[in-house]
Structure formats: structure tokens, C-alpha cells
Length: 560
Image (cartoon, rainbow, N blue to C red):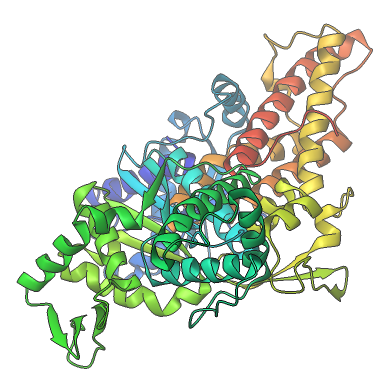
């Protein structure tokens, strides 16, 4: 049980005892939130439950806080976690953890080196995280990289919280964009073969496609030149899809990202799932026919209708297939919650998709959509136009080659997805303590070095006396270590991973302070007991730091 859960139970018990003793009036249902105090000197944790209860109880919040604190203090001898509990104006209850309990937690951390911080709050609930899912029409760019880092890290952290997580990539291989891409590829291929074939309306004009068409001609020859246009386009499309998906998988692997499922949009059209979903909504009276197209009615009288099947060719719209895809997620495959990580350009799609879920009798709250915002670059104080493709885009490969995968992941996670970010290339690539990526990983490397030296010096810390860890820097480091389960719980609750880099940095900083004030290994025989205790503390720090780096998808280097 997390320490915040333990303290929460103490507050609930104190309220019940005070009510039974007529020291406090009945509180009814009350939410008790345990948090770190905002100001130093107010203990390790606090709750504002008394402030929340003041109106219901018609009492001074400070009086309520005193009653709660006194009830807990009456049995504090039985509460090994607590050194003291006090009330403070205007109505807080502050908790100070006992050094003995803090010391005892090191054994718990070291007992679970690969799973420390993992929780069971998810209780095996099925959750899908779908992220990146770009049209298979070219290389991934930095926007996709940011979405990939955010999505994969969220998947990691909610999995650590006890959810059954599936990581999925939605291949947009059946819509109008793919048709235009394939027709553009055919035109570029014919042009490369010396034929004057015009580009289709709305053609892809990126340099990548021209280069790919030229390479296509070299690898496949001119066998498609003499074919009927439609036959050639279909044949080329199958090869291009395979090639592009292979490139995307290679790109995404550079960031250490792996998927459990690659789901094809086209498969829903081929197996009838799309039409089944539309027919189901039609039976519910939600589909109307107008101007040769089929429309999903807006949920309210003033809400806009949206096309799900186009007029003319009768093909599905992106919105239409997305409804069917999410119907498959929730109804066919039984996910209780779905998290989509999209680019900022999809913001207009969020409300209408959630409304469509309501039309399918799926609670829209079960669908979480995260929009990751635009990334710009600078080098020091100078804005940088970072691209090798004539300024058209910054590819994921270019960025990883420039600063490394770990720097990409840490930097992208250091800002919330909803915030636009400025990526400092110079800082991310630097090997200095000013670079938080380097600072955190260097801390892990330094810890590994200490543990190697202990082995070389044959210092066995197995039976260490942890009660010797009383220095302020030692206890502060333990407090930071035991925060990891709280960080995981909060991240899972908020569906974000932004807490992780900040926790890693603060843990590295607490270790650095400890390292500066507390000598771990000593040549003096009389220092052996404290060296043994500190080695256990160092090892527990390694575990917590490595677990956090792993959750962020980063490496934990033993040497730097």
C-alpha cells in the first residue's frame, strides 16, 4: 500500500473515531487527498480535509484539523510510518514520517528490483493506447516522434499501475488520402520513366515521393509503364504500402517503440465492419441521406452533421472509418478505456468523435484523446530551421541522429502534450550537467560505479544496519525514492507521463546532494557499518532511477 493510501486511511479512521466520541459532527462521505505540502517545515505530507469539512460541520477548519490530528496521535505508537502528526492554520493536518520507517523501505525497494513502483490500481482492466498512426505515405517527422514518445510512455506508466495495456498503430490505408498518394506515385513513376503524366488533383508534392518514385523505377523496372493505369496503380500501391510501413517501423524503432497490434483501416472495409457500424447507426436513426452522401446527425439541434460516406464514389470518410474503428475497439475487442494520441491538427475531430461514441451507447468518458502540439527548434538562443529536405519537414531520423533517442524522449516528456515546445538542440546534445538528460543518466552511471567499486573492495552490504542512516541527506534521498509509486499513481490517474522526467531529475539531485555530504566507501575499518548501510541506500536509488528511466523508454547507462 502506498504511503498516501496509508495516511488517507488514518484520516478516515480518525474522523470515524471523533464522530463516535461526539468530538466531531457526522461528516458523511468525504474525499481525503494526501499531498506534499507546498512549503518546507510542514512535514512530509498533509491533507486539507478539515478545510473541505468546515462548511458541512459548521466548525472552524483549524478545530477540525486539531481533532483529526489528536485522534491519530492517540495511537501514533502503533503507526510505524509516523513520527508526528500536527494541525496547522488555516486547517491542515501535517504528517512527518519516522526515520525508522523510511529506513525500512530500502529493503522493500531492493526486494523488487525490476518491478519497484508497480501498482495494482488498474486491476487488469483492458486499456488500448493508440499513437502515431500516421498515413503510410512517407517518413515520420518530429511531430510523430513527440506523439510516439508520449504515447509509449503513457502506455508504460499505466501498465505499471496495473492495467492490461495494448499498444496499437492504426494504419490509414483505406481512405481518400491513400488514393491520392497512390495516384501521385503512379504519376511520378511515369514521369521518371520519361512519360508526361499529370499529377492528380490535390497531389502529394513532397520531395520524398519524387525520390521514392525514382527508386521504385530502378527496383521494379518499367513493368508498370505498359499496364492499364488502374491496374498499375493498384500493383504499385501494394508494394509502396509494404515499403512505407517497413520504413515507419524502422523509424519508430529508433525511439525504442514497439507495438502489439498494427491495425489496418482497409481491413474494416474489406471484412464489412465499416458498413456494419454505419448500418447499426442507421437503424438507430442517426444516419441521414443528403446531397448524395450519408451523414451522421449532430447530437443536438444546433450541432453540425458530418459526412460518413461521400457522394460520388460512395467511399468512406476519415470520420466514418474512425467511428467504425472505435466501435471495434470498444465493442468488438472489449477495451474498457481507449487513449488516442493525435497531432494538434486533429483538434476539430475530438468533440464529434466523442459525440459519435455516445451515439453507439459508449460512454464518451471512456475515450481519452491527447493532442500533442507543435515542436520548434533552437540552438542556444538562435532559432534553427532544422531540416535536410529543403525546409519541408524535420524527420524523426534526422532528430535522433542529431541528439540521440534518450534526449528526444526526455525532452518531449518534459513538457505537457498540450503545450507547444521549443526543442534546444544544443542543450539536448551536450554532455554537461546543464543538460537534464545527461545529469540524470550520469547519476545512474555514478551509482553503478560505486557499486562496482564495492564489489572490487569486497564490501558486503547484505546485513547492513539501516538504522545508521540518519543524516539529513540520507533521509531526503529515501523520501525521494519512495515517491516513485506516488508518481506512477498520479501519472496513471492523469493519463500523462510528464511527472517522470521531473521525478528522475529530483531523484538524481537528491543523490548528488547525498554523494557530496556522505562518503560511501572508506578505507577505515571502523567506517564499514555506515558504508554497508549507505551501499544499500545507493542500490535502492539505482533501482528507482533505472525504473523511472525504463518507464520513460530511456537507457540506464552503467558508464558514461
